[in-house]
Image (tube, rainbow, N blue to C red; front, side, top):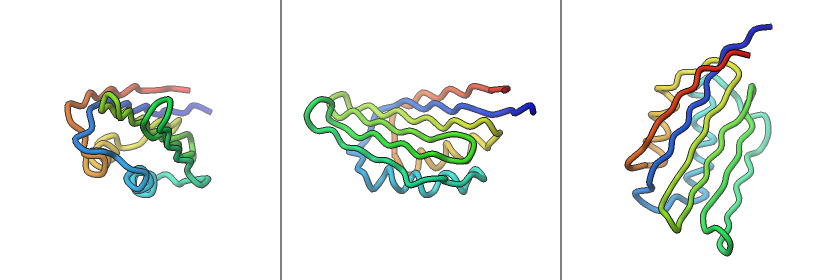
Length: 113
């Protein structure tokens, strides 16, 4: 079976400190907006000692969403990956709204499996 999907990569700077609640909200709101569903409870970890920041991973049908924040450099990285097509504009609008990024760089990779 041929599958066409996308990989949305968004890297930027945080305008403010992003917390676990912000990441949880992104995981709740992005999947239904792009016609996907969460298939398990998201994992959200905070590391204060080695690499201050938060890492979150949500498994969605057809793949995943990951978010990484780096407090020392004020950076944030977001990936929305799916083996099924989705509306990049909708996902990007929510990422911008919930995570309030600055100086973002967006890459979209078309995938064919």
